[in-house]
Image (cartoon, rainbow, N blue to C red):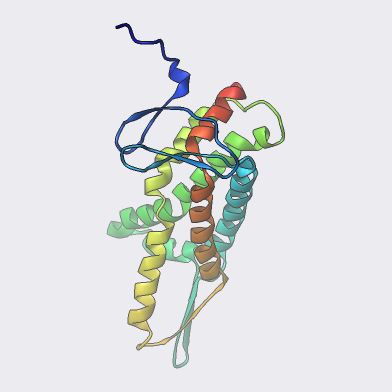
Length: 209
């Protein structure tokens, strides 16, 4: 028996188990899950693009606060030391520690900021009803590829461990950069939760990217 022709545009592949599904029309706030493993395939959020852009812009602004304002202050007797993320990176910028300095800068500043700017570049014109910019799909693909390598939350875990270990040796206080970095972790997590990647790819297709 001959199989019916299937339009590939109507198929969705589960990112976890590779099971094929037919695309369904969802009501507002509804979710479509994989029939085999339960992975969320589609989420209907008509205003998600505006929310994602707002959160990405917020995180990008907070990143500038993180880089140049004090992150931690250490006081022991008369000795007081303040350090920003930029100061921390530059501390290891000479000699054999240079690769470590480069890795820290890339993983906690460059990659997260690049990912945020790539999302803004890809979807900001679409939010205002304009055509997609050149290489918008490439920009969104870059943002997705960088997701596992943007390690802001790992850095916060390391800072928390350091605070516990140093608390008995000196008086520690956190600066505005610390709270900004904590806010970035929460904002990026919320942004990734709101993103329906299939819907965003479809939006780029319709915008002629």
